[in-house]
Amino acid sequence: VLDFGCGAGTLAVALAARQPDARYYLTDVDAIATTAARQNLPGATVRTGDAWASLDPGLRFRLILSNPPLHRGHVSDRDALDALLQQAPGRLLPGGRLVLVTWKAAAVGRALEQTRASPRHQVKLLASRGAYQVWQARDR
Image (tube, rainbow, N blue to C red; front, side, top):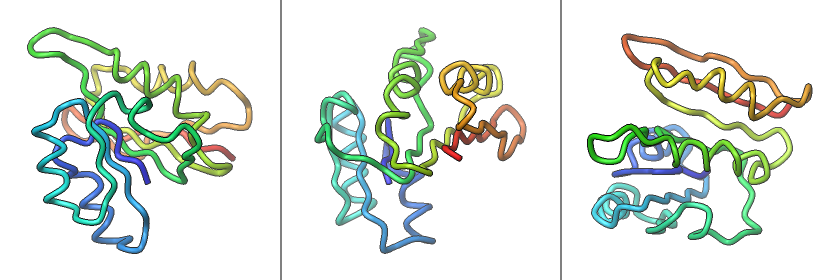
C-alpha cells in the first residue's frame, strides 16, 4: 500500500487498523508531516521528497491511497494530483486500485476518466459527503 502525499499518515493508519499485515509505504514532500507519519505508523517505510523519486522505481502496489494536496499555501496547485494520475497506472499491480479522497470542486472523477481511458479500467465514485468525495480507479 502506498499513501501518496501522506501528511501525518491518516489514511494509512486507518487502513492499517483493518489490514495490519499489509506493507505500507508513505511519502510526502513535507519533513514535518513524514516525521509525524513515522510516529503514527511504526514499521512503515516513510520517505520525504517527491513521491515517485523517493521510491524504488521497481515498486508496484496493490493499492495507492491519497488525499492529494490541491494547493500550495493559499494558491491552487494541482501539480501533485497530476503527477499522481500520470504515474499511478504504471505503479499499480494488475488488478490494483487507486483511491483518492478529494474536494468535489476538484473534478477528480473527470480527471481519472481522462487519465485511465483504457477500457480495462473502471472509475467509480465510492462515497460523497459534504464537500468531499472518494474516487476509485481500478484495473479490471
